[in-house]
Image (spheres, rainbow, N blue to C red):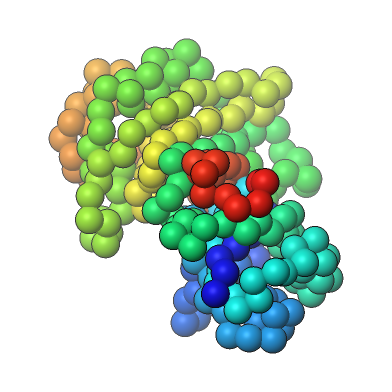
Length: 253
């Protein structure tokens, strides 16, 4: 058997998330169906993470094992893209070592959350529209405090199956892309269920001066999801990068 990493992107608008569910169409389901058809064998697919309903990915990574040890990966990419729906695209397939794991071998993941202040028919599914601008500087002051902590229970989905709520934040900042569009970038070694959306919602509370930066720190320290802000809608969230050690790859990535 040979393991491969597959890099793909998808528009999550029409999906109930990445992971297969008994009720609802998922991206994982579509990818498995396509791979089984193209490889003519039963294939299991593991993703680097599980994005929720309506959440997008400009760079998701998955792995699969196949009996075909010398795949023509460029041809496979072409065939997959011919079969997959228009809102899912495969970019490359790369041969990796057998112990490479798309989830546990990842060293960092990066998400973007987009907000907009102007109605547009072209970004309604890719940015959360809000009417009033928050204080960008205050939100960045609060975001910097995330580096002081490692336990993010306050931003974790209640009754999550995660064995630990410890994460290492590597980047966290807001930026104005233009007058009407802002973006939050956050990078960490791992993320908890619903973590990014809960952090964004709480940072917006700081930006609207509902809570102070000191209050934000207290929320993290209290380790209680009920103290944090509301989770923002999924459609503004994008998984944009997953990083791995280079020595996992047999072929050049």
